[in-house]
Picture 1 (tube, one colour):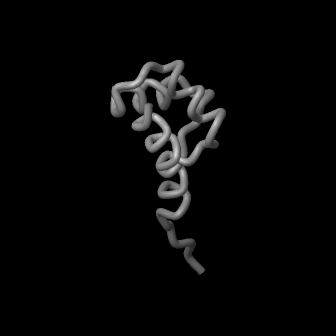
Picture 2 (tube, rainbow, N blue to C red):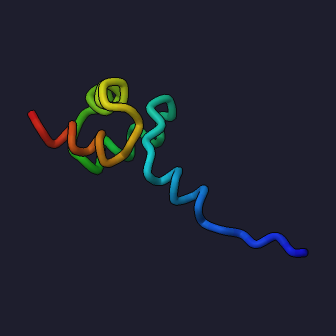
Length: 60
């Protein structure tokens, strides 16, 4: 039997922001216009869901 590759793992990874990885924090900061500190703070307060982090950063 051959193993089939799925994109499930990649899709799950894209839905998260790893607050401990500088390149992910930098990307999210550039995407939302927030500072890296704000992104890390948002990850700590709402969790690592990309949608929740972006919603938190959009609101003052």
